[in-house]
Each structure stands twice: as C-alpha cells, then as structure tokens.
Length: 59
Image 1 (tube, rainbow, N blue to C red):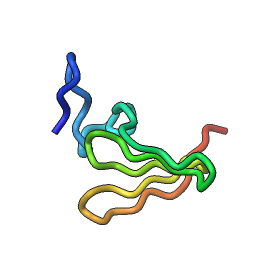
Image 2 (image 1 turned 45 degrees about the vertical axis):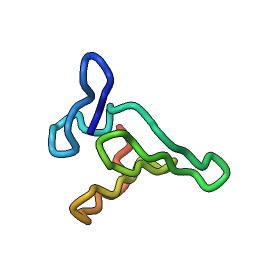
Image 3 (image 1 turned 120 degrees about the vertical axis):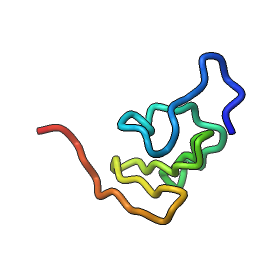
Image 4 (image 1 turned 135 degrees about the vertical axis):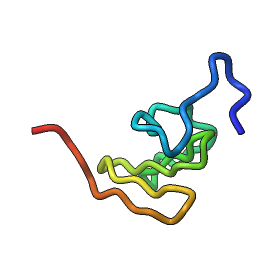
C-alpha cells in the first residue's frame, strides 16, 4: 500500500484517482497509481477489483 505522507486515498475513496502515479506508459496513455488504480489518458479508470469507470471528463 501507499508509503507516501500523507497517505494517498484508497481506490474505493471518492477521490481514489488522486493517488500518486507509481508507473506509467505515456506512449500507451495509462498510469498505475499507488492504490492499484490504472488511469487512462481519456479519463477512464480500471480499479483493483476489476470495476471499470468510463471516461468522465467535465462538461
């Protein structure tokens, strides 16, 4: 889990996508966060439990 201080939000928290990136593949358009969430350039996300969030850009 996260060793940052203050700790990053959990994947299940409403702000779970605000965690720090620990790995990224900019050419492929994704980053893995320290809480296990994979966020995509199009603002979609894949959570550790397999749940998918569709892209959610503000209007």
